[in-house]
Image (tube, rainbow, N blue to C red):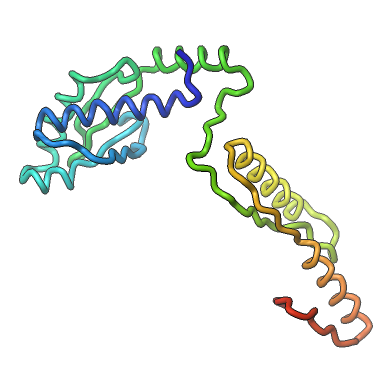
Length: 199
């Protein structure tokens, strides 16, 4: 069995175990399950806050978390090593690293270069507007770094299947050069018609 997103599989297993636990303990269906990263890996990988559920059920959050953790442990799938109550009312899930690592390595071997390509659902059109090197000054590490970061971000988005809009910073550069030249010759630099220029 291969997976584009092994951690997503773990997250899905936790959500399924939690839904079954809520059905068993409270007799109701849990809608969207919003699992959170825990503050520390010592507490597990993912956690679920029980405060809203406890308020609706009229019980203390910690008490409900303990009941749900016990029930979820019975429904745990192979990627889940353990489920426990934590803090004032959280259900925390621990990943089974032996199974998780096995799934990850099998996925990498089977999928090769496609591994990790988690497609965006649905794809969006995104414009990545990042700083370009200032044309009136020498290139320095800060300016070059921002250009590289922007380009890398754009490539990552395209790899995920997002559509990138195109924007050109050429006009901005031309305006900067024109202003610089006009200022050095002490002439007034009128703004091009219809453009917004910030000084």
